[in-house]
Amino acid sequence: MKMSAEAKLPKMAKNASATMNFINAIISAPRQRSLLVATMATVLGVALTVRLGVWQLSRGHEKEALHAAILARQAQAAVDTVAVLKDKTVFTQLHQGVRLEGHWLPQYTVYLENRPMQGRSGFIVLTPLQLDKYTTVLVQRGWIPRHQHDRTLLAPIESPQGQVHVKGRIALGPSEVLDLGDKTNATADTTTAQTARRSPIRQNLNVAEYSHETGVSLVGTVLQTDADADGLQRNWPEINAGVEKHWGYAFQWFALAVVQLLLFFWYQWIKPYRHAR
Image (tube, rainbow, N blue to C red; front, side):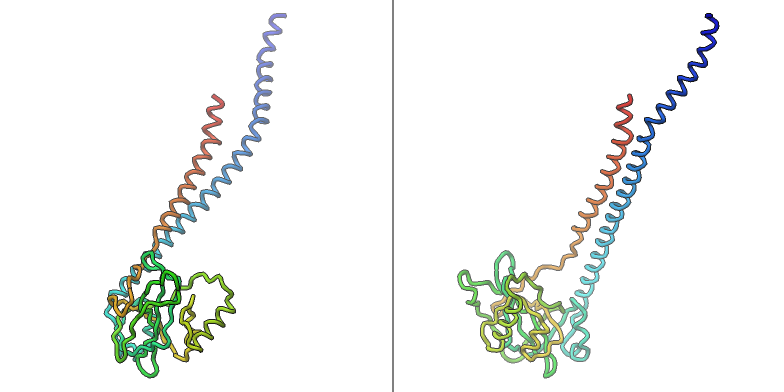
């Protein structure tokens, strides 16, 4: 009887081992499925965040290249009035320096409000400069402060008669600020004001509409960079590439990719291993 029981022990051990393997397989099946899902989600998340980080780096490099091109154009010799009159496509070359001679058209001067400079509220002053009978440019002449109590009281500026010399660079039209009023009424008011020669103060200025209102054909816009004069300040901000923003975004995306990897290894490998021990 004793020998019979001992003979059965290997068989019992084999059956017990098979049973434990079957139980472990049942228990590990959900674990394998969750690991597969977590792995796929992590791979996709890391791939997406790394791709976004690389894209932000490429945007930053593009901004740097654009800024270098702008600085290179500004370093070129300024174009004079004769060259401009021969080839008016010069006004498509943004940031190109120019030296112009012409006559102010002060009756069409406009003041764009809510334009701060060095922390102070004020106006940007724009006046057309007539180069010859058929060619006129719109010049952003400078900045004046706003009256503390009455915005309609404008600081005096001078628009010398006769020929004047203007140093500047080709620029886009004036930037727009948020206008909370009714745009339809605002357009009608500014048009009526210009026609009736009333207050030249405006919130924004559309160059094409302004040209139509005044009957003056404008071939381009110039930002005047002469020293402060005529009651105007010209402390224009330097052109900034703005790449720091892209570097910051890229760091955030790459950091998020690293965090995903750390969480994956912690919850899928390290924590289960420590729990098993």
